[in-house]
Length: 530
Ligand code: PEP
Ligand code: MG
Image (cartoon, rainbow, N blue to C red; front, top):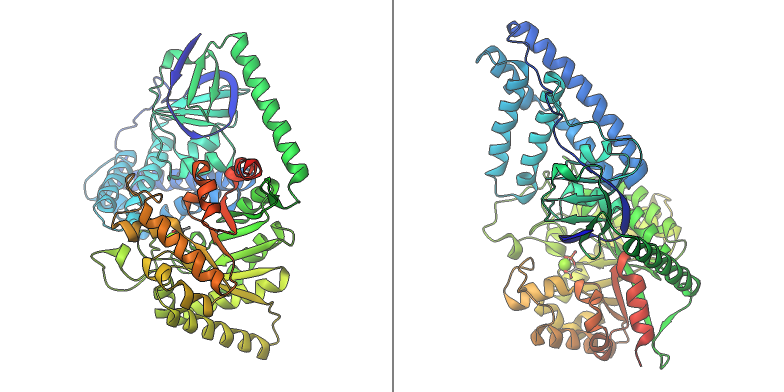
């Protein structure tokens, strides 16, 4: 038996033979230049075949990974219809006399280089997408492609894996990748499909066919695992199932420390699928619905009806438990292609959160109307991000009232909503008492609070929300909120740190909101405290 360590990307365990994915040997041919007309026709035929393949992958991903996971295939289809891209391929064939496959690869490289040079992180990410679609069409033209995967179950190993290739690897029960960005589409899909994934291991083609066991949480790959490892795997999986069943049985009850103090246990989510997972893991509600994700990968912002449908799905998925919908927090590192406004030298300190929403009242009203209408379906609250003053909250609440009055005039049903404030800036923590007068609850966003307190990008590993200054601001926020009887919870990553649970509760927090995967362990942690 051989044990290799990589880095954990998605938890879970699987045992199966390895399949090392890579180009099919000997595949790929060239026909020679068939004249511009002939090459253009071949390109168009391959492009249509690629569109069909992407459509199939979209449907498949929808079933296995939900709307958000499948979105990437819609984006790739749209890119394959982009006029500038098509013109460039045509120019490469007609003007430069390139064969169709070379023409499409060259256009892909050109656009990829252009995207890579952009400042906007969303657009920079498109470089990989344009390369992927051009490789797909070129592969169809030249017959080159990856080797067909085996029948049955396997652990797929590869240098890297595109989302489309992942959808083709139907028998994959786990992934071993040399490279995979935790925030990229492949990781997102794998997580939505519940596949264990480890990264940082160089796959060796000689692994193909070798029995293996993969522990995503531990970041370990066992080649030719012995019986003891396999038995341990089964036992751990059985224990986890038992633990989940035991916890599920208690999931509907309140979460209390041993001394009987009740603590709210909420989930953070960005889609109906995530909300459903949170409910399955015993969430008492959604403490933070990040709505930006509905607005990001698209050319125009979603309208009221589209937003309403999504919020309704989340509310229905939670079966009557409270859902706190955070209004758009665009700006900073979250930019949508349709966003306008001058270029900012320092976007993290620029127009974001509630400031951006108040500066775009039409967009803000559309979202508030959708939230009010969705609230007719179940308990819903609204929450404003990156607040710095009571005036901002008062303006947002005035707009909320106007939206409600409009809906009443239009005879459209709207439900009651509490309005809360996210404490994510030192200003908000220091003005907590004044903010509590104008709001119904607080939720502390420790990710941004740490960034703005420590003057350090939140992505920087050194940006530590456990810094005493951040904890002092949390203490003040709790104190300010409680002075006016407002509940205060925490929804940043700090909330899921088990080493901090005791200290956070000692600061007086009423609840914690964490990713669905952390709910069970946090529940156990709280129930184990005195
Ligand atoms: C936070 O800042 O802690 C937070 C929960 O909001 P987001 O991570 O979405 O900015
Ligand atoms: Mg934040």
